Amino acid sequence: MSKKTPFFVTTAISYVNGKPHLGHAYEVILTDVMARFKRLDGYDVMFLTGTDEHGEKVAKTAEKNNMTPQEFADMNAGYFKDMAKTLGISNDDFIRTTEPRHYAASQGIWEKLKEKGDIYLGKYEGWYSVREEGYFGEDELTTDPATGKKLTPNGTEVEWVEEPSYFFKLSKYTDFLLDYYKAHPEFIQPTVRANEIISFVKQEGGLKDLSVSRHKSRLTWGIPVPGEPDHVMYVWLDALTNYITAIGYPDEKSESFKKFWPADYHVIGKDITRFHTIYWPAFLEAAGLPLPKQVFAHGFINVQGAKMSKSVGNVLSPDGLVQTYGLDATRYFLMREIPHGQDGNFSHEQAVQRINADLANGLGNLAQRTLSMIHKNCGEKIPEPGELEIEDKVLLEHAYDRLIDDAARKNADAFAFHNVLASIWKVISACDVYIDQQAPWKLKKENPKRMETVLYVIAEAVRCIAIAVQPVVPTSANKLLDQLSVSEERRTFAHISKEFALRPGKAIDKPEGVFPRIVENEEAAE
Image (cartoon, rainbow, N blue to C red; front, side, top):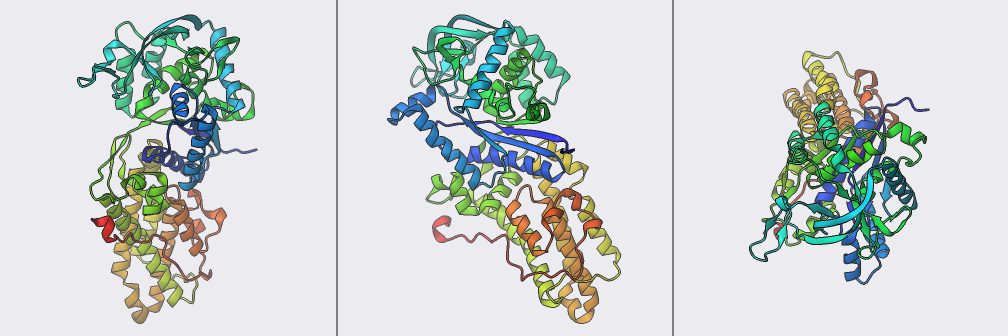
């Protein structure tokens, strides 16, 4: 039985109303980097992603495409599964809300809320956004001067709806939520999102009860309400439950549920923060279940497409990103350029500059020239180092102590992977300074034994760096470790130490470049 600390992280499930885009790619890569980081740091990780497939929007779009909702959901869920493969995502499960296990979980939590006395039948009248699958108060809406239609804060149209509906007593949980936010300031991150949510919950009169069903006269595409053939569940009660479906709910005694719930992180877009930090904790509290430890709401990516290329639309799809920049280069750019929880910018020029500078000319060049010199001048084997000088010891201390330290772990826990990478690249820069100062190409003639020591020190630093960058550039990092003949069982963060240093005399193959430089052709530069 595993003695590792359990760690459960999820993305939001993607709505199947369209194909994956850059925003989906960013969220699933960000979450994948966290999952890989924790696995390498010795945790027993459960990483969940998936698709949200019910609701009015899916039903209407399917009808426009002359498909049944299930056919449409099957088709688009396939695109999201393909995206996970394309982006090298290491998810342990892929949940679809049309699966039988999810019907059982959703109906199970409904029964819990009903048993608590928190669900009642009433009549709904109000403004509803089909696009956002949510209700909005009059005070939240603005009027489009061009069309006269009312719009949500996110700019989507609303329509007036009147229908019989089951309600959840959300108003009952106003004080509970405010007290919880105060007692657990880490629950909503970044802090700016928490402030927005607290302000909303504190609105005059507190929270209003929430419609949690749709009458079948208006919508049939949803999970049936238990014992109520005329109603299907409101999509957010259905969708949010996916997080516990995947670990065995409604069987709260199952090993996976006891092991992994509550989740450590829900990673979501900032536009769905309200659903995850108001509705979800209220549902869970009503069902007698613990709340997730943190909801991390990342920002959006703004695309500045001047000079992007003529196929700008293609570049912004996950497939297009990988075809244009390469898989690991895409992952690196998004993690390095998008700051913690904030909106980020994407431009083709920015991507090429960052990828070439940091990967091709940075880590790639350092590893390639070091391993090439070893292969050519040290008998195709890891050299035997002589007595270490102060410069050698300082560089190795940097490699052992500054790549994955307490600061790196703290940054990772805050999803500040741009800071983790910045610290790693400081060690790479230190390697570049060291190799230029030591000049092993000169030592080849002047002091061959010293050359071997210098090359060994750099190779050992590259080993540590390659282990450290695995969460972000897993394929390339493992190619580097293969070239250094590092065994697969010695590639966790615990192996970044002197105890697991490269063994002199170990044969290495002729090295190959791992990070190709992106060369602009005329069409892309026009």
